[in-house]
Image (tube, rainbow, N blue to C red; front, side, top):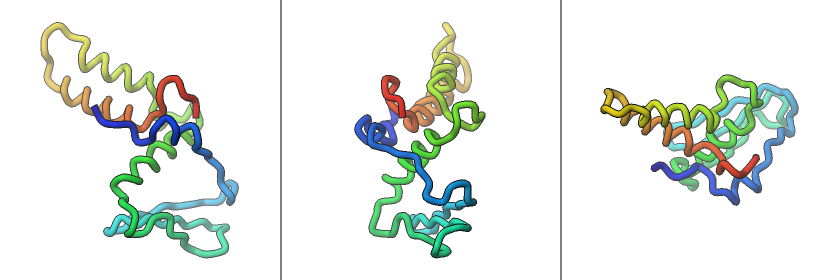
Amino acid sequence: MIPPALTAEEWANSEFASHYGLATTSLEVDHKGRVFAHSEMADEDIVVILNEAVDARAVLPKFIALANAALPDGDPRKITWAMVDELREWATGFDDPRPGQETLAAIADALGSYLPPREAKP
């Protein structure tokens, strides 16, 4: 099983606020793993979110989890526990082995790692 991108404590302490309102904001990740944000309303053109001193491999999954949580509930791109559960059902719901079951289980584990604990509500 893939560990969750954020711990239960990190989920409880997360906030999804923008200081720029509905301004267009883009994120870029360069070859060194640095993350940059650009907003059309920011005082500066580019803000460094992560520099090379930060282990991007450890932090980027947290960004994915927080970005997913920030999506509105009706957004078709939002990963949900219902989706993960359905994938797991397809991966394990047959009496005889089927091609792709292990892949579906791996996808379910990967997607589930971006979700808060089932009892927590971000």
